Image 1 (tube, rainbow, N blue to C red):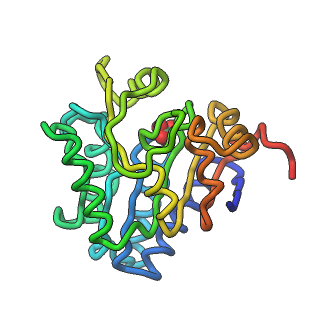
Image 2: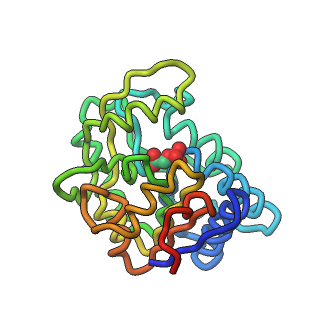
Length: 243
Ligand code: PGA
């Protein structure tokens, strides 16, 4: 696992954007799984700007959704769908046939999971997965749990995710369950980037990097990945033991 600590959120975002651009430069038909969330928002804006100014074409990339709030419409501003369309797909003019997101309004969530797993296999795996980390150490909606869920699954959301998740919504919203890729998808992705910023993430980052690798702290599994990058700003890295 590679650890990079940047001076601030802006430089962290530049670092993450550069890394995504580099993957697409080397493989224009890359399969990308880019998380929604506050942390990577600026990285995506910078990525879109770089793609335009440097002529990096994302049109042949395939996009895989990491997770979604079950029951929340894609037109709701708090949904991952809405975030990804607004920050990535619309500005890069990605065609719908290149986008594979979980349908949160499905009547068959298990079928939706199987469909996503099949899509990933048919696209020969994920080249780059970029994730944030929840305040409880979750990755996507892989919540702290006694056992490891490898592939797509439906989850009952942890109390922390229900509460923290309100920040994405204009109104108080009932969040009970989610649908998510599994930790096996993360471990099998050819490259993984975890981004975190701000002092509020400092303790969970310390535990992720310095405590045991366990599904009770899903993000810690990233340490078993062969080509993983944990990209922080100084504040998120402030509780790490100096190396
Ligand atoms: P955030 O979300 O980037 O909005 O902090 C991270 C996550 O919950 O995975």
